[in-house]
Length: 214
Image (cartoon, rainbow, N blue to C red; front, top):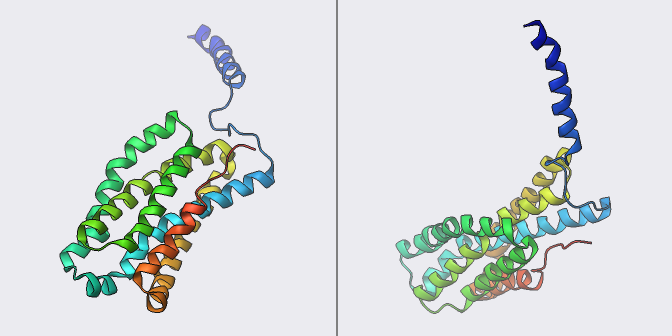
């Protein structure tokens, strides 16, 4: 027993030496300046903004769409909920797995271009099937936003700042919800529901490129 007590500190010291000799798994992989880090956070917050803006806009346009295209309440429920959520959940895991092995920047760019383009295409819908397919596209595209963005944040942001970084990212989404709920109604009253989808969707296609390495 006494021998074990004497040996234990050496074992602990050896383990600590091995741990310090290895790179920390919680430290960022990308060594960047504070200015570039702020740029990364801003761009990912913008991505989250459009992610939630495009997701919410349909819920504010159900009445004019219903009046114009004659959709039933059941059809509108499928468009605002099931059609989006099913494909969002189904594609979220495989896209997240892809983000573990491929370029997160490329995946995020493609996903943002997809959901933004599908949002704009909602403005061209002439029947329920057209709108359904567009909403499915929105769900598939938006499924890649959170896993890719969170993975990028862990690469750029030191562990002691990650909670703040995630808060900034989520704030972008919250602002997107707020703007979507307020602006969509005004845009629909002013320009019509079809133009509203174009106005909301096209900027995301233009701004689809998230931050890359400096």
